[in-house]
Length: 284
Ligand SMILES: NC(=O)C1=CN([C@@H]2O[C@H](COP(=O)(O)OP(=O)(O)OC[C@H]3O[C@@H](n4cnc5c(N)ncnc54)[C@H](OP(=O)(O)O)[C@@H]3O)[C@@H](O)[C@H]2O)[C@@H](O)CC1
Ligand SMILES: Nc1ncnc2c1ncn2[C@@H]1O[C@H](COP(=O)(O)OP(=O)(O)O)[C@@H](O)[C@H]1O
Image 1: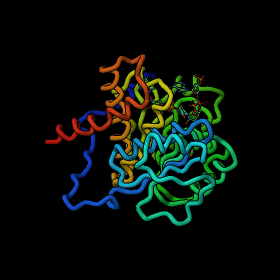
Image 2: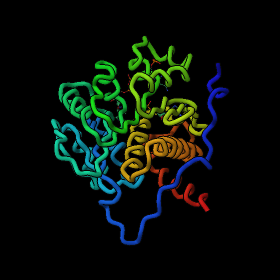
Image 3: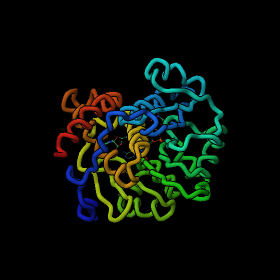
Image 4: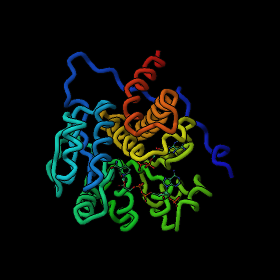
């Protein structure tokens, strides 16, 4: 079955808009995103996700990474605060949102932090190595009731379902995303060409995006976007639709300017503010 026959395409009209900021707004009203990632050699993934959370409008962003990842943050994102691994999340602010996975690796510290994350009730985004660790432990890792958004690519989806490789997922993307949601609960995007979304109600697919986005780090940008939207209080289903759409539209905008071959994940990130503005201007 062709998934496009079974799922409706997301439309611009369906996308929620971010609430207008009151003139006396302060940063505490827009949430505090904690991004867990940045194992040695992968500080860039953490920096991209943290920057994306800020670009979407989060009030504060803290990058939780290995000390070796610090130079990326200092150079790329002085706006972020920084926690070294191993970190504990016993005393987070009330408005915290956690996003785990970008460049996290699968070492001991990552396992410990995810075991703790699985018991927290703050809204969460699970991506990349957080999904690989979840695949190893299964749904029992998710002990608490919490809003959770999951963002696997087909390789990660295969691991989460105990399948050999991504070909099995690609052969039946619709049944794969259904199986993922019934096994792990929560809100899902199965990434790739025409990313599939499944939150509340029927599934839909994202008609935007392009093969230029098949480049290292573009998924890390999506993780930060989703966390930034949750942090501003968007309900999870709306955050899922808007985050995936903004990411794909930003990818299309960057590809039009630069060509798909030259596209970097950072170009998607840089296009996000323009897409957010354009979407706002549609809401009249
Ligand atoms: N700058 C940095 O610091 C960066 C750091 N990064 C970090 O690296 C870590 C490892 O993450 P990763 O995704 O690179 O490795 P991995 O999970 O083994 O996936 C590869 C396999 O999955 C599949 N596959 C993927 N997409 C697919 C698709 N659309 N359609 C179909 N299949 C698809 C495909 O499998 P195959 O088709 O070969 O079966 C492929 O071989 C992680 O922590 C991440 O955050 C990266 O974000 C990059 C930038
Ligand atoms: N051919 C494509 N068409 C549309 N979007 C794509 C395509 N290839 C990749 N993408 C998007 O780019 C992102 C890649 O994410 P991911 O594979 O996790 O990359 P990384 O791990 O390098 O950050 C996803 O959001 C995916 O939907």
